[in-house]
Each structure stands twice: as C-alpha cells, then as structure tokens.
Image (cartoon, rainbow, N blue to C red; front, side, top):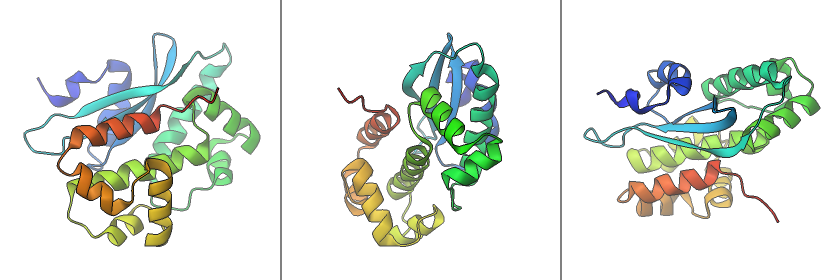
Length: 194
C-alpha cells in the first residue's frame, strides 16, 4: 500500500498533484460528508516514516450557492500554495479569485475558519517550522525561502503563532516530530472565542 492511499479520495487528486512539486506540507480544502475541512498533508520526516494527513477546521456546511465559491476557494488555496514565497496580500489574492476583497474574505473565513491573512501566515509558519526540524538550513535561509523579509520579522511571526522562536522549535521538535504535528493540528483548528 502506498503512502498516498491513506488520503481520502476527495482530497487525493489535489494533494497527489501537489505532493510531487515540493516536499513541504501541502494544504487542501475538501468537502467530506457535506462538511468543509482544511487538510494538511505532511510528508514523512524520515525515509522509513509515513505521510500524515491532518484534517481540521470548523467543518462548515456549504449553502446551496456556495458550490462555485468553494471551487474558487480550492483554486485560490492551490494558487497560494504555489506562491507562498511571494508577497501575498489579501487584495492580490481576492483579485486573482475574481471576487471583491470583502466577499472573498467573508467566504474564505466561512469555509476554512481562517481569514486569508491568517491562513497565509499559518501556511508559511507550517512550511518554515517543517524545514527547521527536517533540514540543517540556517534560520535566515529558511525565512527568506518562505517569503519573510528578514529574520526578525520571521522570529516575531513564528513566536506569535506558535509561542516558540525558530531556534527553540528546531531544538525542541527535531527530536519529537509527534509534538510538532500536534502543534500543526492546533494551528489549523481555529480557536473559538467564547
């Protein structure tokens, strides 16, 4: 059984195509049992390991008219994935989608549980922390490769989202990938403020 066979068939096509483009984690949004889910496929950290699929998010129920918007959101997530190393403003992403900034942000939040800006930041943090624990690249090199302008902004962003600096992530999670996976699961499951 190949490692991609564990992925649900609704997610398989998007993830399978993206999987061979880069060894970084890949995100997709899928419709499973009439619920929308945010999925992160994490490639094996070791050659003897298995890929891991994390599904999370708010499990939104799409309305009757959300089918087309859901399709556009899927396309935009794929486009964001391919352009994470570039400057991705909400305006640029909305323009690419063909929707107004207001409408795109509202639907993106409704369907994924994250606003567009948070999503891009979290995706960059997932990629960078994955590189920190799976490679020996310098922290600055990892930051620049993933769309950060400098190490200071990278450190601020990573610490603001995860609670850890990049150096601490490398030290703490390189030997415990399961704890890193738990951290990623917490990132893609939006916090509910009561």
